[in-house]
Length: 461
Image (cartoon, rainbow, N blue to C red; front, side, top):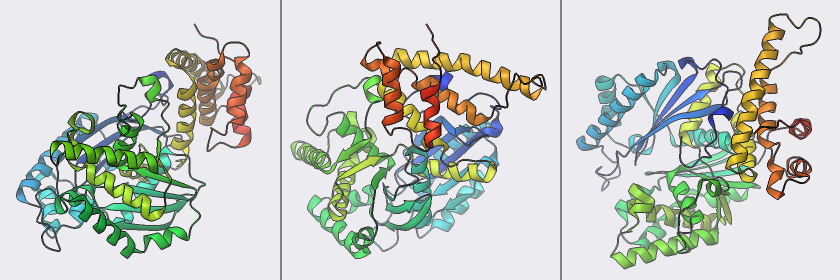
């Protein structure tokens, strides 16, 4: 599971029933900087999914392309790296036994803009037998928005989403799952690094591209409720700010504190990060000596941070929330909608609001207690449901139980003791206040929010 996401005990993850390979899905994102494989297991009753595995290969597909002309060409060296990475992914999919009909390979900017993209796709097909869908910029933006909706409960908000890739940046304005406006700009952290060794020239180029696109005017037409960023670059920026890198106060962060992070940053915090990166560049003669923190993204992090700072300035953004999900999860979500008739596109974001609230107030011991509570409660739930389905409950003792009831039970077990953070005395009242009055649970109606509040406690050792 991604290190950026809260890690929850196995006992409170998706119920194990029907846990066959038929419930496994995968997405492969063939990007400019890296290739990513995402494997998830989905609950067929809702479409809610949890990550089984993530794999990433740093291919740098656009690193040695010919960018001196109006069209780039994927080199033989890049093609060899790409083939090796996809062959590795292919073997991993086979080892996980993911049905071929449940996986999709998509390519973005580097392949989309390549003058020899047909030859690239043909080679991948002939060598590996893989069909790759080349996404248009608008299609890529739509799927990113769909992925973000799986992470953040923002279905009812007018949201501007921004995703910085290696070769392009996607902008989407959406509401209630519908795209109101989207545009893809040829601004990526890899290509900017290649073309502009001087930051001043890079900044000017970014301004020219954004203003020429008319993006500023388009954004002004909408009443934007939230701005959300995705992609590895933006997640790295958020993590750097959270861990104090921008303020020269960096240090180790424990799991408990990590789970409480707000997944957001302000324009002032972003400026502080860019200043720190600029100081680092000047100190070591033009290169960011942050391999230990940004790891392999260090080579391009300055361009990514500068690009985001210019976007903030041009679009008058004051704060950005950050999504742990992006294109890969959007591809998965769309595939789930095709396979499951009763797929609920809001299930993942709704569940994340529960886990986020639980990890914010529960310590590690209380999370383990909640997991044990749900384990016991689920056995009772399954027994009652089996009794009803077998007809043994005809005397009226048993009642019909649905998958949504199990979701409510799971949420109640996670949230029943969050009031303990303020002390044992009257903790149940504090739990009630947080759940009912805190506006933390998104995607649930008023009656559903009351269910965890009114649930009886489940005492565990």
